[in-house]
Length: 132
Ligand code: THU
Image (cartoon, rainbow, N blue to C red; front, side):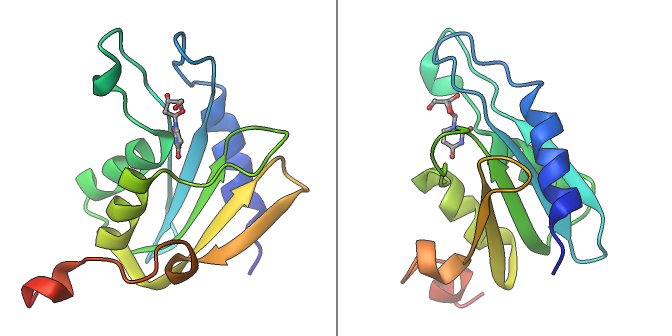
């Protein structure tokens, strides 16, 4: 699968990151079942706990536009290290993952790794545990 466009969109979204407290900018893009792409950045707050991660910004944009099945997510954080999604975002990814979706973790457009969701979130609690 060619994820270059998804990574590019995450890189562009990262430019909009609002991170005056941590100075740690993150961009993310999700690909929905029908192939459309939604992107987002982290959005911090003076009340730190109100911060929203880039992954959740992108996912919530997709879901709020009617897309509940996601095929892949690209995440671009540090250019030096691979930035994996935080625990809260992993849980949100589980909620809207179609099958066992691809997680693309990029330092830049040329340097990235692809993981499966169950590699980074084994034994996840999900709707199946609730009989849904
Ligand atoms: N952050 C993300 O946007 N995604 C992650 O997966 C890790 C953390 C943001 C939240 C906060 O704005 C900053 O990075 C430092 O934690």
